[in-house]
Length: 76
Image 1 (tube, rainbow, N blue to C red):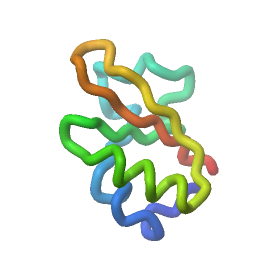
Image 2: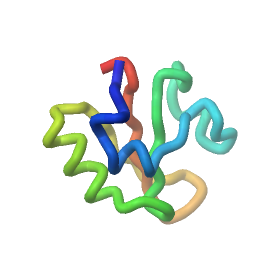
Image 3: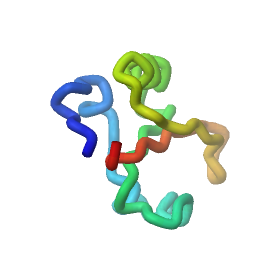
Image 4: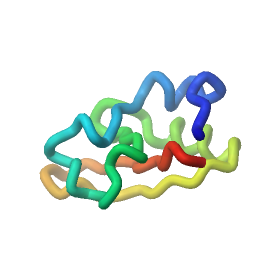
């Protein structure tokens, strides 16, 4: 399981996917994912932290705006 205390940038810039009604249908198991939005977070800083710590994530265009978001599986 992902330890957010070792990832301070992500820890301060994420939400639970299951808590976001507009995005909950993005994945078949939303309770297993965190989401970080480009309109409230610096995705480059979050991505760099995830890459340095060898944590898989995916980047997606937002279906309801011209922003984007990251999905991070918490079961890593």
